[in-house]
Length: 238
Image 1 (tube, rainbow, N blue to C red):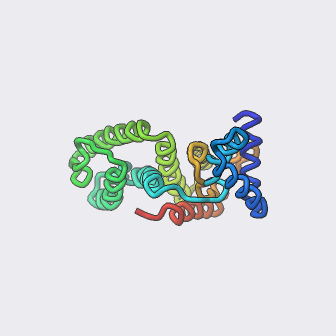
Image 2: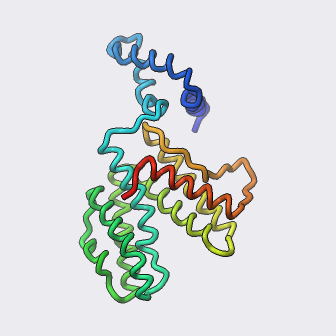
């Protein structure tokens, strides 16, 4: 991000934070939209339009919102669906519920794969099932990449947030693994925001490279759950 982009980002964040600044911004937007065909305001209109939804926390059109919702939840539920702990009956049963949710996201994102029906009836052989999972996941990620960069980033953010929550639930917290997941979630979440015209919900579990990373299991777990709940409130569940 260059100096000009950083300045613009700072301006829009300031407008979003201080509500009294929204009034002159709205006046500018209204005038610019009404007179977009005039040379004197066309440039202002082009500048205001992509930031309007972001500054005023306006949700996008339903189709866009649904696609982004499915992309995030696909990443979140694919973690359980494709990462069974063992081949035991109890382990297989625990991720069937997630696989039904995953199929719903696949359908919502118009993804079809020859072996999708077997998600609910996977091969009994553990290694074969894991190989099949890897193939479907790779195909699905390619599908998202061809559709939208932001959807792929939201998908990855969902995956790493779920993995982070899992890491914080273990008895002995592994600091390096936790940090890796926080950094991965942060990177994908912030990059997704750069591609979207609307404002994503606030994430409490963002990594700051300017601060020394000190982890506290209760604090990270709370921030992770709060982040998930904020996203759930915004996008809704599946």
